[in-house]
Image (cartoon, rainbow, N blue to C red; front, side, top):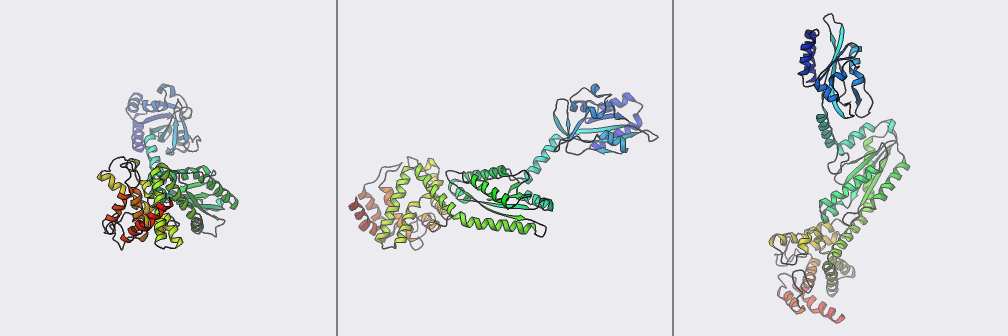
Length: 490
């Protein structure tokens, strides 16, 4: 558009260079900024849009050198650019400025402009001046910058994304930057946090990691989020000592972070490209493989500790849940011993009883602590705790065997339980034991919505539902062997 307008003006100059009044009217009617200089670069005419963008009166610009009125700098370097008017005079050709040029007005305000300066020739092809047409493109430029930023950055953490990372890696893969370090990171424990507390909490962990990586960068380092729970960093002109120091610094910062009381870890692996004989992809692969090895070694303890933290959070928040989990575990241990299970099986069963309701961490407080009866929608939400418990426990090597037990402890032997309506043969044996222990403990304890039932009433409930809700053999062992022993020991 500026070029079209310029062509029009140039044609008019040929016709109007001796018709001052008509020329002035033409300038004043144009919406873009227009400046006309003589063959030395001194401003002869300037229209009102140009004066407005300069923040001055039009008459204050006339008779002054273009470069004294127009302060033009390159946006990134902040260096002054070559005077486009003098360039047009010197070369006798059109001169355009870079799109990243800023015009600084009289008040110090900055705006992006685009312009074209072109020599004005008389009929004998002698240069008699320059016409410059320019316009404010700040809004468009900022929109384009925003689009570029969005396409190159992760929307959640606001650090460079996978695409930008590989572009940067390719640009730095040259000898001036060797040794070139590449670090891979994996946020271990993200799935547990998501399953236990929701994706908003998981997002908080991702933002924490991104912030730490950015704060740990050297001047030329480049950190990015390259996957769901994966990050990477490029470190030009690094060495083993630099990379090890970086790893230690980041690890120390990560260990101080918590989300909902749960700690997570960052598995790390790095590699260096020392010369052109190595391909950048092989170095990238080496760093990634080292990261996964580190994850195997450190991730187990991280996830196990996270589950303990989740249970602690739940039981600290609700005293009845702490008591309930402990007593169900004890009942399970006694049932297992009475059934003649091995000692290691009894220990596993007791732990399963303690963790069976860990999925309740995902249930809203308003439902978990409601003093009255749950409505249909609330009850549907409450029942989701079995699947949530399964998702949480299966994320840990130490507790993964307990996941099925937690998911199935509300199944019924007649096939009408939840979440899967499993029948007698399909329900894990430990889940059947937890079901009896859980029901008895719940009936004989105070709840927000009712007082504890008498022991005799609770026993009768178990008898009436043996073979339908509960496994008959387990009910009999609990009533005949476990409860009498517990009563005698108190």
